[in-house]
Image (cartoon, rainbow, N blue to C red):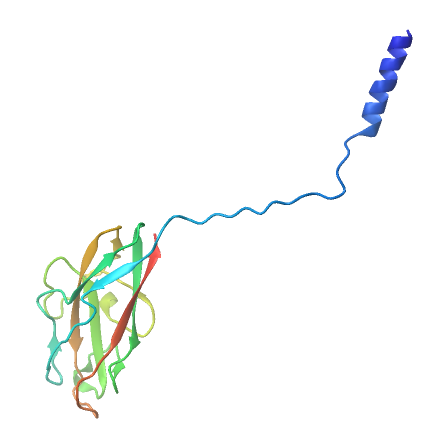
Length: 176
């Protein structure tokens, strides 16, 4: 009987005491660095349209450069004009009746893009827009893959500033 009473007292103490927690909990910080790189390589890094008459458009038969995904994950790409042609402003309208305004199309294609063969999604601006195929449609670039970049440049009817002009366009990759 005394063993039963002692057992009940021990059980009562265990139930009565409950769970005891430490006064100073410990925290652990965890870190991880994803093992991927996002990188683009343009080749070459410039293109010269040469002398183009005002009110004319030019669409070179060959790609003006290639854009390679030199990272290790698939990417989508945004494009934008970061520096406009000196003294000119980009427009999405036909500039052939305008002064100091131009329209620039940039798109991917495996074959030559004929004059006026670009979709409206290829028109460049000073805001980020998705790089698309010349005929429209989204473009993804897998690691190690290059896409051919084609262009069409439409010049204004008039200009107030002569001489060679330079613009800068940029491409930004985003992981898929």
